[in-house]
Length: 456
Ligand code: PLP
Image (cartoon, rainbow, N blue to C red):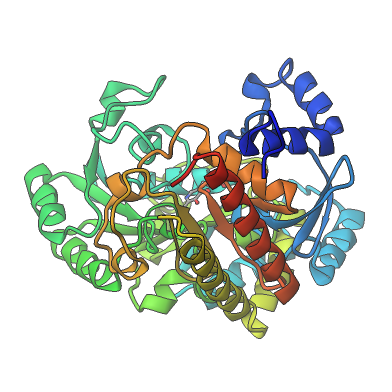
């Protein structure tokens, strides 16, 4: 606990600073290069983020030589962990053959065919360079097919950062556009409460001109606010009845919940699916997959045709990594192993929370875990969260100021890096030793925070 004249939380921060001097120096330089010093909002951290030098399996090492159990998992892209040898080998081979042919190539065909085989809705596939591009294209395809202008999204759900999806997932829940997004665009977006079928149907009927409903099938932010399978099935029916295109955004759940994603697991098939992350095996890449009649609007016979470009669509390196990864996911129990590890980790961390008498909740589904810091001190259980009984207002309520940074830094001082939710995706290569280290890091961090009354 805290030494004399040094609180426990201050001790966390000073210990972090003492072990990361090179990161501190790089972060200071970065503030003169990048806005906020970072290249992705989720990578922002007070007093500064670590700079990573290398990674292997479920671990990574920062520029000061500190080792961490990694729960950022390439923002969810690394189901097989860092540098999985067959994936590295496939990329290395391709690197020697060429990184961009500006032409069709056989790897893109094998990659697309794997998506077709694995993902139930994938009659046709179109590659993009990211998940954001995939949701952008899917919404455009739906609009073109229906001739309608609006899209429906669910409060708290994340679909990337383009204009139609830039608000309503962590703020601006009333639908006000975030800076730079046009009012005219925001007015075309209907925000609905996930899990509330009656209200969703009422909104669909009252707006009338909804082209597409897009949803994270495992619930907002990779299950931070879970939805139920019943809601997905009912949504499927509601969309079919109204001629609305149903889009499952499987950018994170695809090839993760199961080899065929959430749709294969739940047995609900959308009209369009957006994919990225695991799809490209840790390299950049995305895709829209779905019904042939919808995707064929991109084809050259279509009248009118939807134009679609993208310099790095289906680039050979991403294709090589993607093929190696998807083949392993198809032929091994990688998804199951990641799911099992996450289930054990959640149970262990929840046990720590209970033993330490802290009113937090650790929960999640599939290969993910979320740490709910329960800012309003509600009486709330894992079972209730999983049953979809608490909405985004509760589960995405902002934590006490600075608490999440302290939690993340505290964990790092004990050799564990969690993602900013807070929580993280797990991989097929996390081990029992990783689980033990994570549990211990969590316990020590909770104690330090509690000693400082940063938590009750
Ligand atoms: N959709 C979901 C569900 C995501 O989790 C993400 C990224 O985290 C995106 C879309 C955006 O993907 P990208 O970061 O590749 O643009």
